[in-house]
Amino acid sequence: MTGMLLALAIFVAVFLAIVFNLADRAVLVIVGALAMVGTGLISANDAIASIHWEAIGLIFGMFVLVAALTESGFFRWVGLYLLKKTRFDFTKIFIVFCGLAAFLSAFMDSITVIMFIASATIEVCRVLKVSPLPIVIAEICSANIGGSATMVGDPPNVIIGTALNLTFSDFVTHTAPIAMIAFSVNLVVFAVLHRRLFENKHVDFDKTVQEFKDVDAFGAVTDVRLMRMALSVFAFIVTLLVMHDSLDMHVSYVAILGASMVILFARRKMDDLIDKIDWHTIVFLAGLFVMVGGIEKTGLLADFANGLVGLSGGNVLVFAFLLFWVSAALGALLDNIPFAAAMVPVIPALAVQTGVPVDSIAYTTTLGCNIAGNITPIGASANVVGLAIASKKNVEWSWKEYCRESIPMTMASLIVASILMLILLY
Image (cartoon, rainbow, N blue to C red; front, side, top):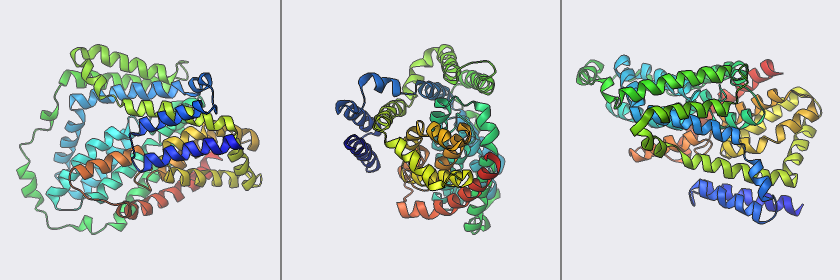
């Protein structure tokens, strides 16, 4: 019992320090991991073994690919191209940018996606004389929902999917349909709540288009060779990820293969690519896995699983419903990455106790915490980054303003997703 309380105290202390931004989150989890080892909650050997290297390898590989696309100017080109194609029509911009956020986040780091989409959105909204904050929040929500569609989208999918030996195709088959419908609900609710934005008649669209007619979208590309090479490798890697199970290849091997090809072909750009990798996130995840390993050793996670099964009374549908909404609640209150890491050892235990397949429990957990991560500004990494960009561009926001926008959209998406989850997965 003492070990449980100590492990929980360390975990909560680190989480609160992250919430209040007392230090870099990578530093904080490393301190927490050292505390777990130093207090004897987990041995040094077990700490190393608790790190899910498959997930680390997959994330590293995708980071390199995205860094190459960013360095080449690919994302800036896409943003400018879409602006010209939509002729600065607000309705089209909203649908296209939210759709792009969801689609790209299904295949790459949502942080990078939000960085370029939020920046472009803020500039466009200034031209159109509308508040950018609601649109940026809608894009953040779209990115997190889109990321739940595949195993390489949101970090919780990577963590749980690799740990439980699920495949890229497994996620596409089971979670993508639910994510697509949840995304549509997200847009509809936003459109209803902000219908006045779509009725804006104060902007002279023809004049705006005329002012920007000479903007060359392709001029945003700084390295054509790097962009073409990175896109080719990216397409190759996505193909291998889809087929990795039949080819008997680990997803981490596929991602690192792609990263190696990019670094090899990048030549003089290699140092720039390595500098752009989000090393903080990789270190953060490694430390987090050790902390969760310490909690698991105390038996705290097993007690959590037993309590959840007990509440369901042995009814599978009640259990699924409870699991989804508990995942949603904790995913909203916590960063969904720590929650996903904590659920890795819990999911197999739940499967044994309930007789429900491991994969169904995994999809239920990831859908709940990914979508609910939209509710608060700290629910997911994309939220933190998107709002940080808004602040840098003098777009003021508060927790109250963010939640006022996010809660209606997210609750509607969660309700629809929970119903679809019961129908399609159980």
